[in-house]
Image (cartoon, rainbow, N blue to C red; front, side, top):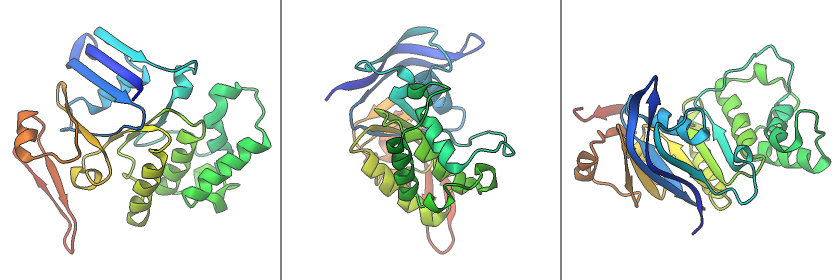
Length: 248
């Protein structure tokens, strides 16, 4: 299977202080990788390195774009999108803005582009809000719109940072169904604290805590997590939802 991204013997961090060291990570076409780890372990730093927001102190970050720009190669859904809620832009225009790297700032969107954007909004249950100002939507509704924006350019790699943080319980299950469908078209790297939920959907797991340990399966034991020095957070669901934290 073809590579999309390869990180080789990299270290990175901030202000010359390493957060991640001896980092080796490869993403192939149609991978679906769940990234877990403790707070402060480096999950966000890993995403910033992939996105080019920070550079490696040492090692390499290689992309296999096959003629595409790096920007159009990756779709990204952050945990929270910060924007001016008073800015007069519609839901449909937000989704179409995901094509800007191909169209340019003054490019015009075709009828086909708009049909694609509307079909993605339909997929996430937001088509009826297409002409609404994005600033009037709830946090969960906005996440659905920004997911559509992240994939409108048909990226080869979709990166999601805690995507279910602001969505309602009803849409959370639908979200993972959508991701499973998208995974037929693109690789996905999904950061989450909820191993119990994502292990039903991802194909493999990366444990990040100062470095990265790749586990080539979605089934991972407590013993393996200890070997990876990756403390487990278990979310249980039932009449009384609660969280169980292992010592760390």
